[in-house]
Length: 399
Image (cartoon, rainbow, N blue to C red):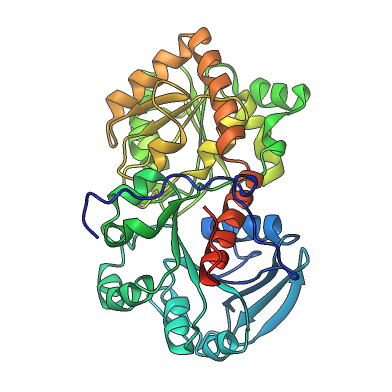
């Protein structure tokens, strides 16, 4: 399509879309890479979405098994089929058995979560003729060779799509792949269960503060290259406060060495991994939250939503991804250039030194989280899209 075509805006919730009366629920098959208890951002999203959808549609989920065995199970009332992995190539499982399972599925809609070469190849080989929805979680950023080899198959699949879900307007706008399909791209941001983050017992918050002190800066994420922790640590040389880093990963030894070299041992604390239910008091104890990512591999930054739901303002970076869409500069936090320790320090100091500004940004952050990023909103928008696709496919599209 040409660049002047106006892409669809945020998908409305299902209550805003006339629904076709039907005798039975829509049946939807989701194809993911893996499913919890395997942990990962896409896996967590897939679980959240399916749990939200399970009472409104008939659901099946096909994913790769992490070994050569198959497993069919019910989790949260959802049918999960883990298909044997026969080969793993550059971290990508290949499951030939998924082809026949798709052929036998007899569902109304197929919903594929990308990037996922295994699912796309299985779909193309299966001959499935119903409408297909894709959630485009991110471009292939690091695996350039695999991405280039797979791209013709990806475009062959996307050309047949009924709809493509982008998780933010920014990512839809900046993705080289999605640029060809803007006429069928719909924005449905990630949603999480907000309730667990909105409130926290004062005693649990005080425990974190008594252990770590006042003027607390929090950052959460795997210690990997694109999270930009090196620049955040360097920024702490200009900040009077304490940085708590929750998470672990391959860069931890080098980041700990950097902290020591900069004599920041009393100002930077590596907390390590913290279970979901235990992380909430950290969000409430922190004066501000920082997501200092430096590369497009950070496609969205769900941890921003967790901080915002806790009423904590966010400092993020101006990546050409969904990161600055989640927390808005000057409204729910401050956005700075990526890989810029000086700018990070300036934003952190501004918030630490101005309690009224922190409070105002935090209040608006909580409201934005509730308005845009709850799992109920995400689920309702997805249902609305399913219904529109199903009605259109059967020639009864309502406007």
